[in-house]
Image: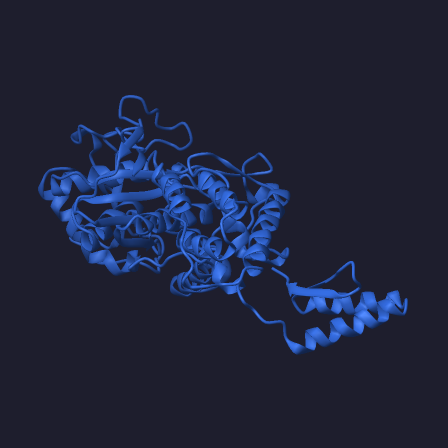
Length: 461
């Protein structure tokens, strides 16, 4: 298996630390709003990587975090600076911070299930690892990597010689103040907060006692603390969106490696951006779509899952409603084809097509090419029962729930309606026949007429 490593910026042969076992971590959602379809592309990628590793025989110890505290606007260079997104949302919605995070975690987990994403061993919440984060700061302080300012405890990036290897961002090439006012107390523009002191002017909902004063952990710290706590000092794979590579992941590396003296991550995998109508997705442009909006337009979440697989994860994917409709049509065609096959559990699985399929997954998780193998299989001349068992094996990776579309029965009331429609058609009562057709469609089935004057009924996917 070959993986493109964002750290080395090249394809590398994948060699896990422990034979047969992969330790994997993915940056999850900040739980103050509904994830948008760009976020879901990353979370789907984590599932594709997980399933591809499992398909190739690895055990995977997978952890994903949920940021429920300390995600500051200033950490991303936002001119609003210093405001916690969760605290801000709590004020806007008139709720407590706990009510906000609990609600959006519940919504996230629902979407996660709807997209048929593989659950990690653990979803870690930052607030449950505050003691670990405090211990990590104490270790960094003891080793001489921190300093204190009036607003918090900071990491001194000038003391980590490898700072910038992942991002290209270094003390020498950054120009602080391009988007925000420079902090005069920071020793270097790239230094970042490990612990932020609570403001004296107002009471925060989320704050903790620490050796340095009452406050809360910096956003970057949580991932390091949770990885070290749950997976160990060095892990195999760390995933995230490409927007996290420049600062967040670079800071994770710095604080983790300075604390442990060991390499933090062997393979960094970053998902490219999702564009909408060939441009940036934003609320101001009215193209900021959530999974609920996709469903409300008549799509199945698995249509979106299929669309994500049509582009390589390192290639920007352009979302349009037309592209999603095309993905829906392709997926429905697969459902229709497999639904027409008779299943024989004893039929052979095609080694030829499984080998080709696996080769695409081993080539840096090349999902578009893997889908091409699926269509090649369906168009092949091998026996249908063998095709079916082969594509069901492939679905261990695809996650399209193909088994649910095999061998289903049409309810008797639907058959009765279709027979009534047939009689109306035979007697030229076209308007009533069309009313029944729409009624059947509304119940989740499609009735099709045959040249002989009979009909076929199938599920509407």
